[in-house]
Amino acid sequence: MSPCDACSKPGKCCRSFVLNFPSQPTMTPLEALSIMAAHWLPFMPLMRYQNGVFRFWCPLLGTDGRCTDYESRPDTCRVFRPASDPLCVMWEALPQIDVGIPKEAAA
Ligand code: SF4
Ligand code: SF4
Image 1: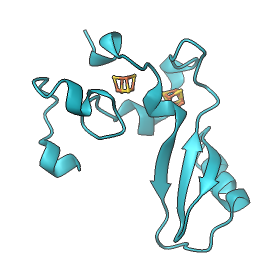
Image 2: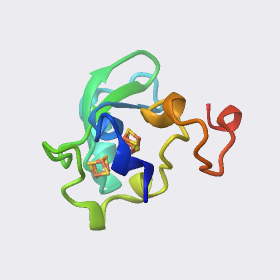
Image 3: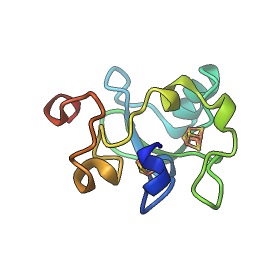
Image 4: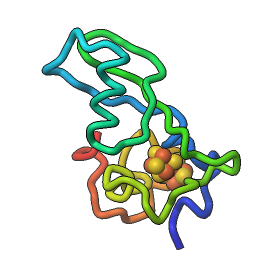
């Protein structure tokens, strides 16, 4: 059983997340979108912060909080471990889950 099966906010991790492009501090939302497309990533820029930091959302997230393309989801999504990052609601809620990554290392 995956921790996601007991998630209190399914899809929170896909609804709004930050990606950082420190080598491109002046990158525009259109450029960020182009980079996503070049890497076959469906993520859409939602908000631009300073120094190449963007908030994204994913249009493949279903209304039920589940991925609508789960079998073909990007590697970026496949390697994300529930509770391994503050992005996940399980980060603080279920510290007893052993996800193999010390929180200190994932922060
Ligand atoms: S990764 Fe975390 S936030 Fe995302 S669905 Fe799973 S438990 Fe919920
Ligand atoms: S492709 Fe699926 S798993 Fe990845 S962010 Fe989008 S909805 Fe979430």
